[in-house]
Image 1 (cartoon, helix red, strand yellow):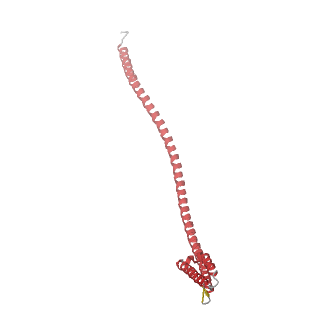
Image 2 (cartoon, rainbow, N blue to C red):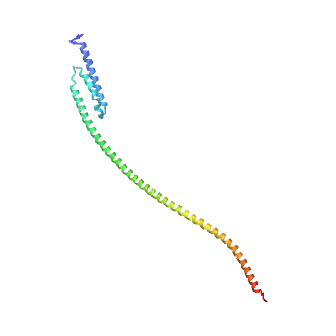
Image 3 (cartoon, helix red, strand yellow):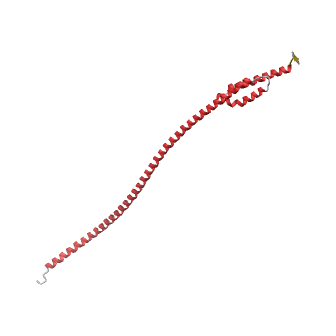
Length: 193
């Protein structure tokens, strides 16, 4: 139906296109406003899809919106590059600091290792010395034990000799008395008297 030279269908289509365009723009605007600055570049493709949809309506000029969005995404790309460089520099600094800390810990641990090795060597040397001293003391003990046995045997022999000597002395004393008696008897004997 045509009223005042305007086709109702055409007007209805224009109204519908305008509404769709407004909804598309609102969707893009909300998406951009709710996206954190660090993530703006991540919605570029999604926004391009909406712009392509909006371009399909020939009746509306969206070049101003396209320019603004291009500027937004160009600036976001510059920001991302600068942020990335900053993060890389910070990462390098963090890595350098972590590397220095790791090297310092390694140096300190090597010093501890060196001290532990030195202490172990000292203990092993003391162990060798103590083992040598132990062997020496065992040899001295064995020699003294041999000497003790020899002295004990000598004492036993002397005790046996002493008991023999007492018997011999007794026998000798008895024999001596008998010799004296015989001598007296001879002296007292006067065979030719």
